[in-house]
Every structure is written in structure tokens, then in C-alpha cells.
Length: 197
Image (cartoon, rainbow, N blue to C red):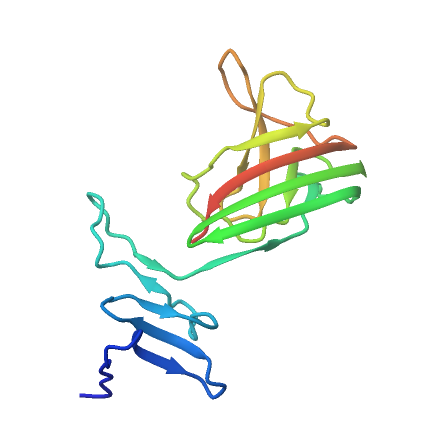
């Protein structure tokens, strides 16, 4: 039957300590919860995590309920042209991200003082590749932008199966989206969320 631990009715029914006599796991008297008192729970194998399959699902759900990834960090975003990436000089390059399962949220602030790219403007260097499903172009919010002095609402969307953001102008009165051309200098602030495969 394996190892069976039976509590004796003390403060904690079951207590596991390490060699330094420090409690690392305990089950409190009269409770069914397990408390990790020291250290972290570490998944030793990639792709493993916390499985929520026992919880009730929404109608039609047939996707994985395994929470297998969480992380946050920084990255270096760049500005480029779609036709020719070119090179740029920067006075500020800030990128921060949080990844929860398949969803990535990224915040970017770039000030570029010069650049020689051509074609439509893009922000490159996202920390993870966007899903290859083009039906998920989640619009982002432009917080501040000097280079894109256009009429209408500026929006960005991640390229399918890519690590860069495209920018378009959406006319206030309605109509087709318009791609935005690369400008030689400017400031871009953008928050974006997207899915990974």
C-alpha cells in the first residue's frame, strides 16, 4: 500500500522536515489542505503542471486544463520596416512580459532617434512566437506615439507565427485599415496580448 502517515492529533497531524529540522510540508489538524512551509513546488519535467480536469467546464470546452507555465521577465524590443528592417538608434528600449499558460502580455516603450528601415513600421523582438492562427490578431493599445501622426485610431496586432507587431490606422468614421509607413524617428508605447501554440 506504500507509505501511510497517520497524525497524532498535535498542532499539525503530519509534518515533514528536512535535515536542518525545518518544516517543509504539513497537514494541519482537522484540515484537508497541504501547506508547503519552505521552498517551492518545482515541476521537474517540462510540460507538467497543475491539472484542473476535475473542475466543471464551460459548454463545448475540450481543450487542455493543464496549467503548465508561468513566467515574467524583460526583453529588448526594436523598430523595423516590413520591406527592409534597417537599423535604428535608441535612447530607450523597455520591454516587459508575463506569460500565463498560452497567453502572453507584453508592455513596450521605445524611443528611436534615427532609423533607415523601409515599408510599413513594425515593432520586433516579442519574447514568444505568436500562434500561427491568423484569426487571433488581438488589437493592442497605443499609449503614446510621435512617429505615427495619422488620422484615425492607431492599433497594433501581432503577426501570425511571428515575433513582431504590425500597426494600422482605423478611420474614426469607419472604413478600411491602413498600414503605417516607417518614420525615421519617434516614440512608441504599446501594450499587447497574444496567444502562443
